[in-house]
Amino acid sequence: MNSEYQIAVMDGDYIGPEIMSAGLRVLEEVSKHQNFEYKIKHILFGGEAIDKMGNPLPESTIETCQNSDAILLSAIGGPKWDSSIKRPESGLLEIRQRLGLFANIRPTVITKSMQPYSPIKINHPVDFVIVRELTSGIYFGTPRFRTSTEAVDTMSYNFNEIHRVAEVAFEMSRRRKKHVTLVDKANVLATSKLWREIVSEVAKNYPDVSYDTSYVDSAAMKIIAEPNQFDVILTENLFGDILSDEAAQITGSLGTIPSMSRGKSGPVLYEPIHGSAPDIAGKGIADPISMIKSVSMMLENSFDRHDLAQLVDLAVNRSIEQGILTPDLGGTASTNEVTECIIKSIKESRNEYATK
Image 1 (tube, rainbow, N blue to C red):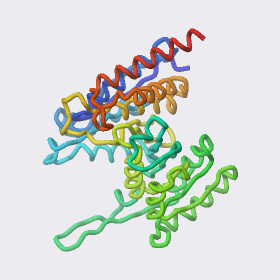
Image 2 (image 1 turned 90 degrees about the horizontal axis):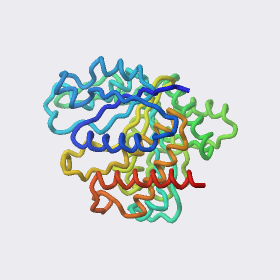
Image 3 (image 1 turned 30 degrees about the horizontal axis):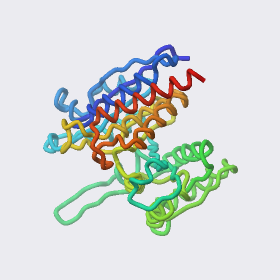
Image 4 (image 1 turned 135 degrees about the vertical axis):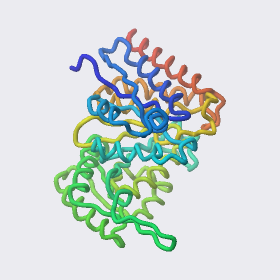
């Protein structure tokens, strides 16, 4: 076992440092006396890196990430850098490519405690994940140009880009409910037809996994009407970008959703799905749950500490059940009060376990 894990931390912009602080406090508490030693290294990224280095992704940041066991990233960007030659968000595209983070995994979980906050009527738990291809497709395709009267974007995919992310989806499904749904637009797009051909071949290697397909417009409706029918949704970059935001909305708040981006090897990057919320920065009311759940995902997936991740998740649910909530969920609690409630719950759970 590694005697001391290395965790790279990028604090983010606006509310980013506020929620990152909350996540690191929870990590510190849950790891006490648990044979989990780690070292945090804060590195520059996004707007902070532009201010200090003139570049949203300095080379030193990449080097530190490559030498780390996991990466925690908070929300970045905002109006301060709207006129910058390089915006903070451009660093996201670059870091994904440089670290080979081709699969973005975003869970949609509506527990019993979260059901009252969902904008749709739900009387049963919802638990599915979207596996989104992250480093190809229309966001990266060429040619790309724009004139005063014409604009062109190009969607392009090849065998390797599709095959490797499909394997991620099927492997993940084996640890869940063993069901993969490919979402595409194969009745129109040549790229989607290629996706279907390749993914259907990958599916043959997983006879224990149920596999089906859905057009993206149909899937968008089903996420609202019947979200419990999904387990693992596999899709390309653009569709995944849109559907994962839609799925996040049915949970009740973007402020509660974590995500992770991974490649074939190397460190995995964990981050909240939401933006930097400049309008509430410094007010102490940002929801820390998304960052805290990102820490939980890291413990589960990068360090195989299901026990610690479960402690965090239970503590988050208890906070919600007790009504200790920030304004995004209709509550009046501050970021610090929610964090303190979660830390207190972790302590109580540990004490309960110790006395058994």
